[in-house]
Image 1 (cartoon, helix red, strand yellow):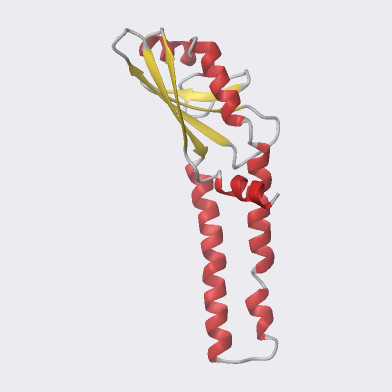
Image 2: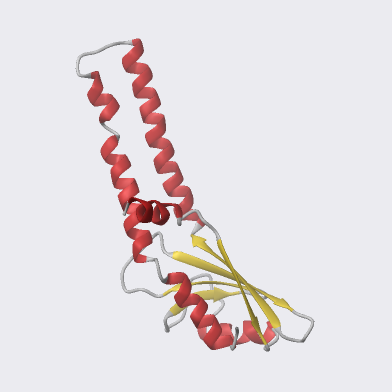
Amino acid sequence: MIKAGKALFLSLWTERRATLRTRLSAGDCVAKLQAELGTGLVMGGSGPVIGRVRSDHATLKRQIFYGNSLATVVRARFVPDSAGGAEIRCLSNGSGFSQGFMGLWFAFILLWWVGAALAVTTNPMPLGWIFILSPVPMLFFGVGFVVFCRYLARDDEAVVLAYLRDRLEAQ
């Protein structure tokens, strides 16, 4: 259980790569996805996957009916191959914003602990241990939040890759 929780926690920052191949050209892949998902700044789509598509790449994620700030995002790049088809290079992990925010969350807790330890050791005060222990609930909340949200997102990458295989006739 601890091992699974650790894997879920680290999955926010772990990059996973997958490569798909299709007989469709890179331009056809882009056109097909743009027709379904759109090209706007906001992710669009009405099926199991939402996203936005640009000239040679797409950003995709699973459509869910609840909010999950730490959902898996798949970035796909369409590269022409020598046979006239395309190679779809996929990179998936948490969004950059969620990685940065949670990194700052844990950095703040560390900074608090270092400051509290220095303050209490240089200037002993009654009940100083409360100052040192006060960020412990923040640490547990942060770890629990990441693990819970990544548990909810555990199948997101598989759903998006299945969508790409189906829509773009990829292997």
